[in-house]
Amino acid sequence: MRQVFVIAPTGINAETAKTAQFIFNFVSKQEPKTAYFKPIGESQGSISQERVRALLSSGNASVLMEQLLALFMEVASDQEVIIVEGVSANEFPFRSKKLNEIITQALDASVILVSSAIGKTSLAVCSEVEIEAQDYFEIKLRVASCVITGVDESTKESLSQAFKNSFVPVLAYATNDDMSIDTSLAKKIRDIKTEHHITQPEFRANLIRQAGLNLKRIVLPEGTEPRTVRAAILAYERKIALPVLLGNRSEIEKIAKTYGLDVPAGLEIIEVTETISNRFLKPLVELRKAKGMTEELAQDLLKDSVWIGTMMLKMGEVDGLVSGAVHSTADTVRPALQVIKTAPGVKSISSVFFICLPSQILVYGDCAINQNPDSSELASIAIQCHDTAKAFHLPAKVAMLSYSTGMSGKGDDVDLVVEATRLVKSVRPDIVIDGPLQYDSATAESVAIIKAPHSPVAGKANVLVFPNLNAGNITYKAVQRSAANVICIGPMLQGLAKPVNDLSRGAFVDDIIYTIALTAIQAQSID
Image 1: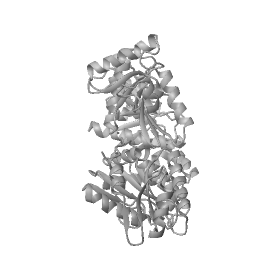
Image 2: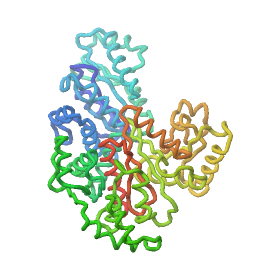
Image 3: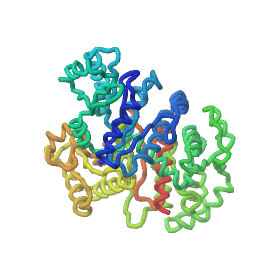
Image 4: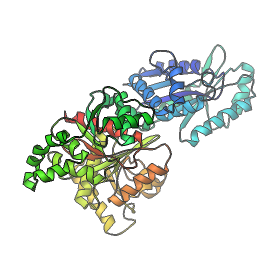
């Protein structure tokens, strides 16, 4: 299991780089698959300080983290331990702590603090370390130990006494010439087994990287909607996809300028004219003639850009479609169901949201399509959600949610979840699933120990299947609007023959960008 340690200073003169290199040398003698990563610096494989400052000043911390994650993944491939040199307080006096917190969170790492003893009493050093550690603990980050630099023989004993009862153990004391490492503690730290969680920056970076491997044409029917215009420009510039905007060019350019953006020369814009609509008239009639489609009805439908975009997708002119910033879910999904239809062997579609918390990715389903599924439909939703999580390289422990954990509650709603869980287990024994579970039992280990101690899922679930649309839609919007630093990507539709994805009408620009990315990835899987 991969372990990542960020070597982070508590203040200036802590010799972060020297300490990180020493720990790397020590660990690599015991574990050959050990790598060293310096996120920020002037060497190859790092992001320059100038670039970091520019991204932070322009409010693009998320882009910075994606770039860092991309570099990290190149280094971390097939490695067991990665020693990360944190940002020195000397380099970023006012931002080093925040940067190290962000890096630690993004990498799902443990922290080894470095503090200088020069000019400080032993009690002051201990207090400085404990205050810093507490700050990490408060944002749910792990502090494994600390290293004290600038130590001489006269102060080593007093430092040992000061840290005797500290909740932060000392890994090493470093003099100017040497570092005496506590080998027993080092072994304990190395033996700590933590389940790696794919963090929000890592998931986003993976989406961008994977989408960029094979650029796909993604049509955006709401081409003059301001958020969509901005998202299309940014997706094009970041080489996530090849967006195709449907709308008036001059209007799109005007919208872009209001946000200080220029429409790239290569960004495709298709103006919706009668000629364009007529091009799809006969194909649409042919596709739907068994359902009573006439030229008059088709003409009326093709006044809507979503229908035009859907026909472009059907005829292979684009690879995917993203809509919903203005249109309702029904207006986005209906053309897809009638023209694109379900994939072979799939009876019905469903949806998922990727709920990107700062330190973990959750999959919510179904929050957009199926209003009151029966047990068979709910089982199908659970299977689709599980397979989607796996397709995006996420672990998949599925919780079937209810107001009851086990049989603590009674009623038809509980019975529905019990039966759906049984059906999944019978047709897909490979799926790790449990239910009924309350939300807190599913996601909080402290609650799971009490309510469901023997469950293989409770406290560890990352795929959360809601019993009906009411519960799912309310929950995802509550999380999106109430929790800090959360990105909700979706709804991503599951079960269609070609990728069509809906947006919440309250979607942010980032939500649209990442929905474009996952749509492109879905399109790649069809190739």
